[in-house]
Length: 240
Ligand code: SF4
Image (tube, rainbow, N blue to C red; front, side):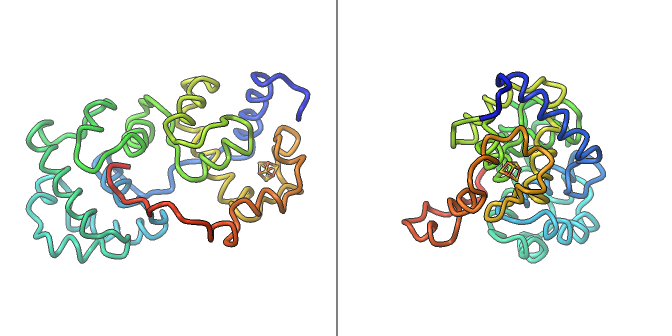
């Protein structure tokens, strides 16, 4: 384990991540809070690249909550079909837009409580919108990369996103909550993949407790062989 006390180690870690990924940002393409909200709902169990391909067409057809509320369900399903779970995602987009019209004057609300009361919007989606569309983070986005990296970097011993988020909020200063998830997501995508962490070339190797372990063992935890064990029920895009 690195010799630095946890608080200092995390602070050093944040510094290196900031230098390594100075341009880290949300990789979903959006130009307003409504677009980010809808794109994030679609991103459940789907890559950002695929979502961006779909939203190019979607955002041409639907520019306002009224457009989502009025577009025929079948048309909406056909547009969002490539993102998977398309029936329930189309249903959520419509229900969410209707709730925006009914309760928020057609505007995307700016609080966690109001956002998570919208159909199809869970804590993760709400945190994305608050942090990236409004610059008002009330929490930390915990996706699969953040979950994996938090464990490997010794930021949290927990497995559930809620508990990991609570740890990250405790250890990381609030002004860095939004960018923290981008740093970890970017690092997870570019350096610390689930199967093959590139520890040898890793910028934060000296601050990472897992770097001292055999890299192949870190990867093996997530290898297909291990995943042969009874799998958990596939996550649905319900309120992520
Ligand atoms: S040292 Fe290895 S396990 Fe640690 S963050 Fe870097 S790539 Fe991931």
